[in-house]
Image (cartoon, rainbow, N blue to C red):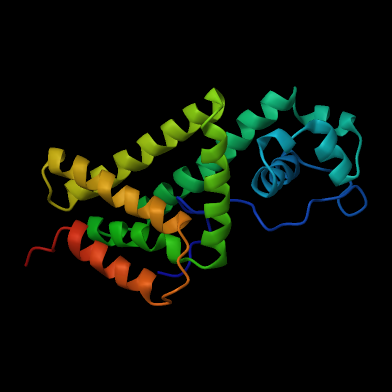
Length: 211
């Protein structure tokens, strides 16, 4: 399968874009503000994501922000919802519509961390949100929902591949842990390392196809 056009978990969202300015984009959309907030979150921290900082970076007044959002908390809630939709909901929907079998869907999931720059951008966002979640209930709850949704989907795929439910549940946790670690740990010492690990994990965690 070619690289997905929709974002993937645990890797993808709107990153690497220039912050839109008033001169280049007069009619800013809510997504423009969310994208700019994500850039600040990744490059600095959640403390840097403030209305005045965003407005200055985008070359507009604070009033432009309040046209789309009630307040900063509204922006943060929508940022987290945007992350969930892009990094989880859309990839699950794409896989479900692909007509792939359960083993092939699992292989697609395991390959997500190797999607190049797109995967790197998404991993940066994931790490920033998980760091934020360590000291904020709003982000923590969002991360818990996403983790539960992802684990449930992987468990479902493993059950469809023939594993008993309890075995699938434990195996899903191990598989998901690999996905998170492979996305966030960037070992450049061995260029072939990621592919070798992928093959090992596929052999270890994906049930063999029955003849």
